Structure formats: structure tokens, C-alpha cells
Image 1 (cartoon, protein in one colour):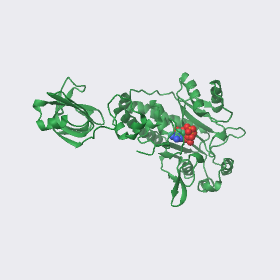
Image 2 (cartoon, rainbow, N blue to C red):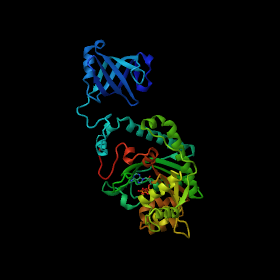
Image 3 (cartoon, helix red, strand yellow):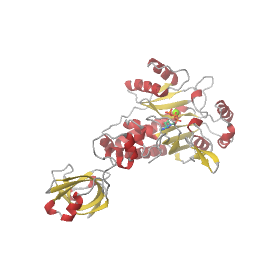
Image 4 (cartoon, rainbow, N blue to C red):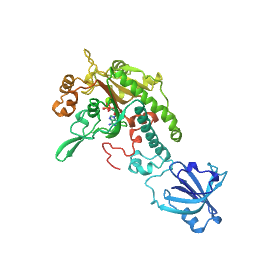
Length: 434
Ligand code: ATP
Ligand code: MG
């Protein structure tokens, strides 16, 4: 007897096998019954000719509630009636855990279920092959990111998520009570990955949760996401950072296409691989496109969701899905970004994917007096950042880096309608459970 972990791996000549899974569908035609058993990888048909099956077993398998967890042992028989070319004739079975009736939502029903209902019963939602595939692809994406970073000499690090100050602006900080003191959930590893540049760990990356108190309901913001951050030392311009991201994203896209072929097929999707290098637009060029598109944006203002979309449509029409937007006004960028002297701009960039920002990055200000001046200009008190500033006083290399929202990358790659589709248990303004 062989224990099968993957229904896809069963062969007609396997003999007697045990298969574990969920009872997806049961059809009782009187003289013969069929049970469709689903595991992570697919489904297999358990065929029960009434006369040939022990009555107790027949009764048990034909009265199972849908989605019960079962273990079936039986003989594999060739069959030209099934898609796989074989079926299983059961000899014994165990109901591991029976599913209550009715189900909170169907797994294979072709009815449209609201996203809220799906998220409320997410364990059931993820039983659907096309939902499960997204998370298998996410796992492959993480593997590919790690691979590309290591190939390029990056060290994987973990930095604290409970902190005494934030880096990305006060409005999106989550305050927590830390034994009577105020603490904040990390919005990004920004300050720590920069401190690490002064340690000699000259290239670091991190993939970990970032928390943003985004008090708005959009299809691309959540309050907790997995941020992929990189930081590299001794750079001479932000261009070096951009070409590193390009290399990594290209590796991810190609790898997903290859290693995720099975999951992409389940989703009925293919992904395009944009040619490297990705175009570099300047903020000013984008501003012009946005204004031509009929949107009135003031000099120095953020392009905004609508603006980004206009640029995205323009770039897509020219065949470019991924492109950098460079030289943002320094005013629009955080304190740690380096200003472009004698201009209102900065050595910063965003990477946009079909009209949506997936990454921000740039060259950082490594000269302490300039850094402190920028903090003050932004209304921040350098005293709150002393632990960070100290690392700039004793030999800080020039450096730069990026933060990529991994779920935004996945959502754009797979053309999903909402960032929540790429998060197992999303957190947003109104959702804290499951
Ligand atoms: P946006 O303007 O789209 O709100 P941002 O400029 O505030 O994003 P950054 O601080 O630049 O975001 O963060 C780096 C990356 O992290 C973003 O490019 C995005 O991919 C991701 N990210 C930021 N905020 C969120 C969020 N609330 N939910 C999911 N991903 C996010
Ligand atoms: Mg940004």
C-alpha cells in the first residue's frame, strides 16, 4: 500500500493506495456512486459500484457531507471515463473530520461570492485551486527574491518591528503601549537598514511585515504588508540601485513564469517579461503626460492614483509595463533621500508597474549635517532619531536602496483586482479578523 501525498502523482499501475483529501463532490446514482476527492494538487475520482463495495463503506462514503476531510484506501484501476485515466475503487476509508452543513461558502460552486464573505471564511476560500495557486506563487516569488539577492551578494537581515520612531511620516504610524511608553510598529526597515550600512554589511535585504495606519479604503493599501527592502553601500548614484532592482525583478518574473507554470495554468494567466532596462522617465515628463491626460496637478505635487494611471496607460500603449519615475521633487520625498543640489529635485525614484507604484527608492543622504537639516526642514526632531544619527557620525558610506511592496508586485504580475487577493489574512481599516 502506498500513501499518496499528491493526487497528481498517482499512476494507473500503483496498485493499492491511500489518498487523503476533502470530499469535494458526491454523486449517488443508485447502483454506482462517485466521490471526487481533492487534495492540494488536484482531484481524483473514487468509484463505488454498489455490488462490489462492502455495504458499510458504501454507506459511509455516499453520505459524507461535502468538504469533509477523509482518507480513502483502494485499488487504482485504469478507466477511460475519467480525466486522469484511472479511478480508485475503495477498500476502506476513514472520516478524519466531518464538515458541518451547510458550508459557509462553496468551494467549487460557480457563484460569485463577495470578497468580504470570502475573507470572513478565508480557510474555505483558499481551498479553491485558483486561490491556493496565488499563495503558491507568492512562495515562489519569495524564493526568487532571496535567490536574486544572494546571487548579488546581499545578506538577509531582520530588523525590529517595535520601534521608538517612524521613518515614513507620522500619519501612518501605529502607536502601541510599550510598558507604559509610546512605541510604534515599523512602517519600514528604513532607519535600521541604513544603520547597517555603517557596519560593513555592505548589501542587505529584508522581507518582513511593514505596518501602515492607512485610514483609507483602496484596492492597493492594507495596514500590514510584506516589504522587500534592499540597501547597498558605496554607490555613486541612484542609477546603481535602479539597475539592481531591475535585475532582481527580471529574475522574479522569469522565474515565476518557469517555476510557477503549473499555478499560472490553474489561474489561466501568463505573465509578460518586459525587456531590461526599463525606461526611465523623469517626474517632470510624467507631470506633462498627466496634464495632457486632462488632470491638473500642481508642480511638486504627488502624481496621485489618477496621475499614475494616466502615465501607466501611456507607457502600456508604447509596450512598457514597468518603468522608473526619477527625480521627484525633494519636497515630496522623505528626509533620508538626497537632494539634487541647485534644483528642487532629489536622487529618488519610484518603480511603477502598469500604472501603480510598486517601489520607492533612491540615494540616501549620508552626510550628517545635510541629513539633520533635512529632518528639521520636515518638522522632525533630530533628538528622536539619535540612535540613527549616531551611525552617521563615525564613517558612513554613500548608500541607497529601495522598498518593494511584495503584494503589489504579485498583484500586478498576476493582474489581480485587489491587493487583498495576495494576502492570506489581510488587515485593513475595517478588518482585524480572521
Ligand atoms: P503609496 O503612495 O502608493 O501609498 P507610498 O509611497 O506611501 O505608497 P512607500 O513608503 O514608498 O509607499 O513604501 C514602499 C512600497 O511599499 C510602496 O511602493 C508599495 O509597494 C508598498 N506599500 C506602501 N504602503 C503600502 C500599503 N499600505 N499597502 C501595501 N503596500 C504598501
Ligand atoms: Mg513611495
